[in-house]
Structures are given as C-alpha cells and as structure tokens.
Length: 502
Ligand SMILES: [Zn+2]
Image (tube, rainbow, N blue to C red; front, side):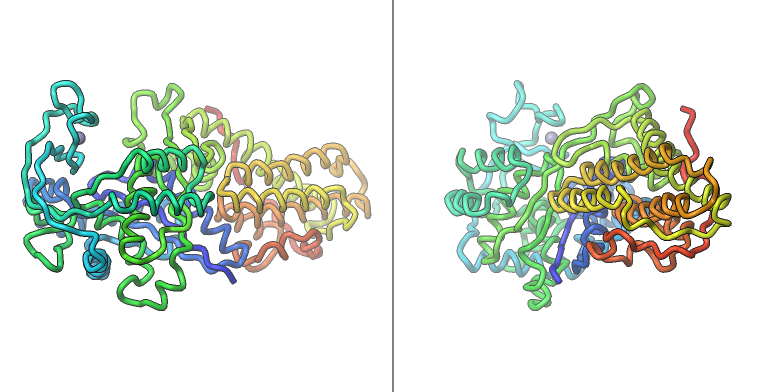
C-alpha cells in the first residue's frame, strides 16, 4: 500500500473563509478522496495560521488576548470545510502545543547545524505584509507595493537564516527532481528566482510577542512564516514521533496558490535541507480564481463565502464547478453564470438525466428490478478507456480532465439510450441488456465521482439498489465492467439536479 500525504496551505486566521480558500481545499479533498479510492493510505492536512503582528494587533483592538481571539476565529474554517463536505484527517492550528514543540526543535536543529546567526537588521517594514522591503521593491515615494502605504523604519536584532548557502544545493536538487514542482512554468519561476541569487533572511522578531519563542534566546519569537511552514511536519510527528514522521516524509504533496511559491519552493526546501531532512517531494502550484460574469461583478473573490454558494447551488455542484472549470495550474474564471451553465449542462442534462431515465424505464419495463449488464456492450470498451484516462488525470493532478473523461462515459450512455429507445420497446432481453448496461455505467460513474461529489455518488449508488458505499469500493477492481449484479430493486426518485432557470 502506498502512502499519500496532501496538504493545503494553512489559512490566515484573520481572513474570513472565502471561495479562494475553498478552491484549494476542495481540490486537495478530491485528490485525497481519489487516493483513498485506489487504496492508498491517505493523510490530508489543513489548518489555520494564527501568529504574527496582524493577529496580535487585531486581538488588542477587540480587547482580547491573542489566543482567546484566534480560538474564536479558527473554527470558522473548520465549519466552512464541514459545509463543503471536506474530509480532512487533521486540522492543525499553529497555536497548538504540538506545533510549538516542533517549531522549536526544527529551528534548534538548523541552529545546531550552523545555519542561523544574529545580526542587526535595519529596514522598511510593512505591518500588513509583515515583512521588510528592499528599496528597489517599493513604489515611488517608498510605499508598499501591495498596500500603497508608507512603511515604518525598523531596526532590530534578528536571527538570520543562511539562505544564501542553499543556492547551489537548491539548484542541484531541482536538477535531480525535475517533477518536484508543477506546472513547469512555476518550477521555472522558482528556479530562476534561486539562480538570481539568494540573500540570508531574518527569521525572528523582538518587536512582537505573539509567536513561537526562540528556544535559545527568549527575547525573540520566530517570524510568522517560518513558524507556519513547519506545520507540515508538525502534523506527522516531527520531533515527537520519529517513526511516524519517517513513514510520511518527504513524500508529501503541497497544494499551494501561486502567491506563495517563494515560501514553498525556495525557503521551505532550504529550511528542510538546513534541518537535515529531505525537501518536500512535490509542490503543485495553482492559479487564482478570477471573478467573471455580471452577477458577481461588484464583489471580489475574497468576499464570497463558500456557505453563500452552497446555499444557492448545493454542495456537490459547487465542488464540481471548482474542480471542473478551473484547471489546477492556471487562473480560471469563476462566475454565477458559469456555475449555472455547468450545472445545467453536466449535472441536470447529463448525469441527472441519465439516472432519471434509466430508473424510470427500469420501473416501467422491468417492474423496478434492475437487469444485469450486457458483457458485450459497446459501453464496456468506453468505460475501460474512461477508467484509464480518469486514473491518469487524477495521478497527474488534473481533476478537470478526470471529470471531463468521466462525463464522456455519461454522454455516450445517454446517446446509446437515445438510439436504442428502450422506453418504446417491448420488455424482453434486448431492453434488459440496454438497461443493465446503463445501470452498470451508473455504478461506475458513482465510483468515479466520489472525489468530486461524494453525496451524489452515495445517492446514485443507493437508487440503483447497491448496498455499502461507493467510497468503500477499490479501484481498479471496482472499475471492471460487469460489477452491477442485476436483480436489485431500483428506485425512481426526485430529480437529482433539477434544472436551473437562471
Ligand atoms: Zn504591505
């Protein structure tokens, strides 16, 4: 059995969960669910990033202690993910004791290995960004390029990480691991940043308190980003359960947005090397959701809550849209019109229609008892191709292609039914063969859509009379044509996806 460890970024607790976060999380969940289907031992991690000056200041404005405040904020993410049917195995908060222990051990190791030193740092600091800027990064007039505000001049004693010593090791590592960062343009972006020269970076602060204390000098706390990145190893037992850590590391899959490439593809692998562990095996970089259409034109992605969307469209249609319409790796348009169009085309007219017509005709021609599939059906060949394509697409981290392929099977089956017209024929072996094969397709589709639409998969499974759950099936065995046994009571229920009129 192989292991599959997948992570989302940990989300900054001060933000409200929005559809951009949902995009990362739904993709990670779908990948995790796919790997469970193929029998892998899966560990799916998400969580919240809770330290830093912004959090401390905001808590102070609320008249609260920082932890008291983050205790109120972090559950919003857990609730948002429950509302999207996200099945994460762990939810890490960087304020947990297990994380403090791991951060202190990880950075002590780097210190012991000689990659940390103390120096005075002077620079222009942006509080909202929580970072210093070099003069050539600023807008004219010395303003923050993101916030367009004047920066604060700060001088402090800092500990520095010798990132500069890892330029060549990183270049060598990228050469030896050509598929480690995908897609390739993002890999090239990280690599050219590395080749452009790496400077040592400040990793602690004395000006703030809200963070993990430096174990060898408690006037300092670690900078929020250094603490945050280490969450990925905390959750698998770094510094606390060596055996567990060795089982899961380094074969991790970090799913990240393109705005945090440098952290994950430059700093984090260098930090791992400095701590004497292998860099993460795989980083998949995704693009941004761009808001399109008219209905949402006055909003912005980070104002749209996942709950608003699932209330309007349903959980599975939102998951499906995010996976199907915004390919991982590129930016993609997200709009109310897009969700509706995809819903009607793929869910109402194709999948929902297939289930509805098959269960209806089984009711009228077979007394509601589903016949067994035809072993020689043309659809058996289509199903075999689709299983191979779908598997390849999930393995390549391309959910949109996996779903496109699955929908080809649905589409071909609808076309086959339109040709055979079993609703017009006399009951008998010919009708049984056509309907049995269509039921077999529904069985296969229920398994193949588990990653994208887990509750839809269960409902199809139930209506065609199967017991157990599609998520408990194991591919590729469950993908072999002929698994629908026949002789099961088939239920014609309400439309799974009533057509939308907007
Ligand atoms: Zn800024």
